[in-house]
Length: 360
Image 1 (cartoon, rainbow, N blue to C red):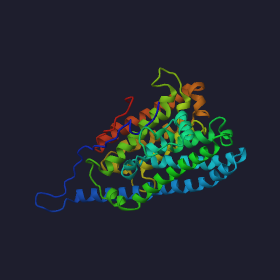
Image 2: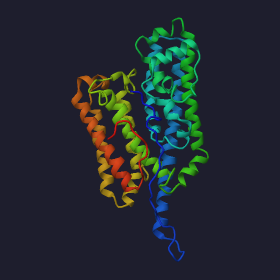
Image 3: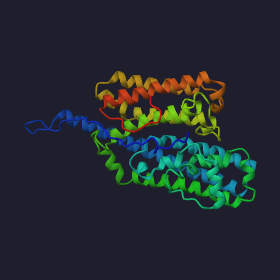
């Protein structure tokens, strides 16, 4: 049930989407020039108005979280722990707006693996705390002992408060601080690279070949939809276990944020698809004379978001108690996934190249 972005390996090999740059007589092709101008503007919008602000917001939310978290660690009480919850929620929800940008600096750092591999593995976390021997930089093997899921377990699992006053309290407090420091480090490093040379690289990548920005975006849209359909909803709902529910494998299980995080993730994806207040992939489809498809995808985003919001809270209980509502949300997410992974990819001539674990 573990969700690792390495297990859904994304190599992002794009298909051939060709715009002629010159005519046979050597003059500039006005159509190609117009297309490139549009794509430059679209990618600039993504960088300056979506991706960089998303990482900036996450960075700010993590800074805010540090204050109540340190207050709790200095004096662990029910009251001080309750004060952590709103700041933790704000930071985790903010993270969902960065998840779609898992390419370039984030992919090089494996940041999403380290920040949000869920579920966390309590046994491994407790062993790391007891031994004091842990290395957060080891990929795969230590993905599940850090990031938001680990922080969530440490703070909000049953009987978590008493463990901050027990025999290993000092080691536990150090571990929590180390987890938060690691989250902040990865976020800062990613943001710094976007504010540096990578922004120019991203904005100037106007094709859809290997490593191009448009291929990254379309692949990551599909990838995030697969993650929503699978690890966020389908897997804990029993889609890979003959109907046996594993609610404790959900994202946001210990904090009770499962539905909020799913909605935040999908809402962020829609925002990226439409480009917020600027041009996005939806507008790119219109430029390619695929207006109907763009509108169909936008409408399905709204249907899927509504279906998830219709699942009674807590969503983890609804996996067993309200299966009809969960099944409907799963079905609407699957429809949206098909539109993006098949129709949008085809319309933009981008090849979907990552490997999922359960098909479509």
